[in-house]
Image 1 (tube, rainbow, N blue to C red):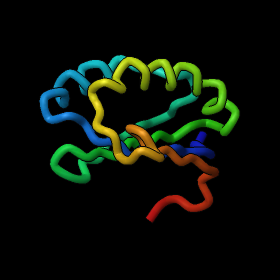
Image 2 (cartoon, rainbow, N blue to C red):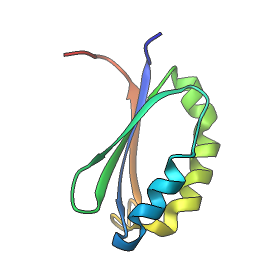
Image 3 (tube, rainbow, N blue to C red):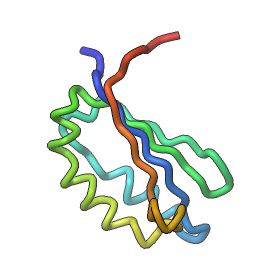
Image 4 (cartoon, helix red, strand yellow):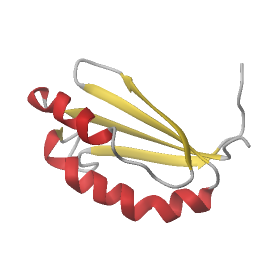
Length: 98
């Protein structure tokens, strides 16, 4: 089955925390998360993209994702006072493929 929902989270790591972040991140597993990628978008800037079975499984996984963020928040730099350390968005996949 193909994923129907996705989330994207922009974040920036503290330079001295990059290795520690990726060690912690590799161990996080959420039910319904079908695939995930992290793109390096700047020297210490990253963008996480997750593909989910449905919106409902993403919503059900939010407490676990928030707990993970609480675990790594101190490894991240503030993006802005309004956003904090992450800039998350999510939505229904409306187009895929090339």
